[in-house]
Image 1 (spheres, rainbow, N blue to C red):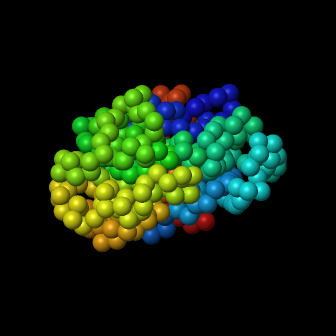
Image 2 (cartoon, rainbow, N blue to C red; image 1 turned 90 degrees about the vertical axis):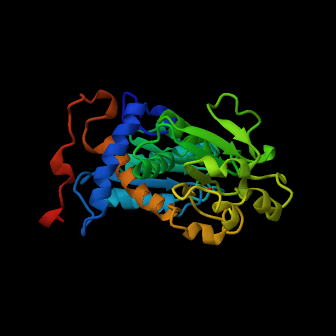
Length: 332
Ligand code: NCD
């Protein structure tokens, strides 16, 4: 998490040290518990205003952040900006300055161009959370995926994760690679050459084009969506051929160990990267990822806005103020 002179931000997985990641994952346990209560709401962020500023389409990420903010009792403002009407630097700046003038504490930004959340963080005194920028980063997705894996295996240390599919266009792949390797997992990318970035040398990962060679020996099969909206040329001969070569079919899923997790960030292209029935298998944890996403985002919002104890300057024995996460009771 970057703590500038102003508010702390979450722009990239690389902003987080391993200790900070572990701390966020531990805090997520608390918010998973809150999410299971009959009234899943705590007063932690009462009086704070959180804005979601989505310049690109989204269903789950946006709803997840808004639900998280509401469960922490923040006021939520929601802006849906079409990417075509506001896509120049100046207009983004005008938008953020207008929103800021209303008095806000955090802004959750999604944009089709890499770097926009960082740019916005230089224009506002509010905390900025990157909810996905171009092909670049999606740090809360990586946190929720790490949390989901950890909840099944106890930790990511020594686990082998295959990230399968359209790595080239995927901010989820970039964020997850960094997150998983920083938590001690081994990552193998599985994709045709055309769907890998030109070089993967600077990443601490291996790559293969042969999905069938890895299936029997992985703890997680993490499937990526084929991001056709980001392909300006034909990178695979046809979707049918892609599915035949890389899709997780029932036949391929049978080669996985029974405890291998099947994950997907959503939205799924059923029948392309994942066969419909595969998503219903007992070891497919795709809806668990969505459930955990709310709690992870509560933890992030709480860390940035709630306790006043920002990650970097917290003494090791500072514990979370228990009152902040106690039941709403009759206060609501
Ligand atoms: C991802 C995204 O938008 O980056 N979805 C998500 O946030 N759950 C992945 C994708 O669009 O393929």
